[in-house]
Image (tube, rainbow, N blue to C red; front, side, top):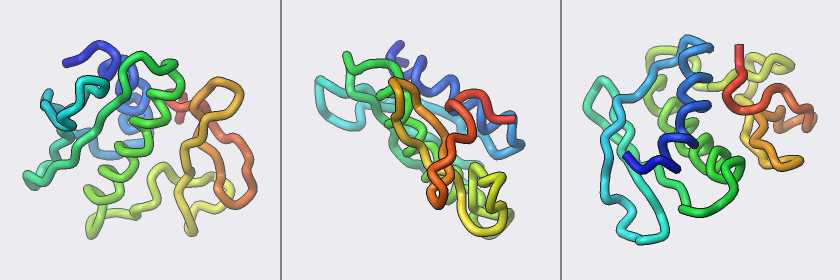
Length: 126
């Protein structure tokens, strides 16, 4: 798999593992068909999949935020019908919404979308 995509995915996969969320099977892919982007497919246990990609040459934090957003979409779909779908769960509002990823101060952060409070840098959830 492309090294930039591998590097961007690693912290997000660590967050999935740390929170007990499902972890996708990842397969290198030519999606999207764009020389400036590196892609892979995230596969669920039920055989459904979703593409994930990074724009090559962008700063690592930007790539991490780009990937975290797609992995979060995958996790929500994978959890649908079997567990709460607010991954990663907002510790300030655990029953209402997930955290969202934002790029702030040159880092990818999981942030409460209601209050704007930074909860964790992507890759450091517990």
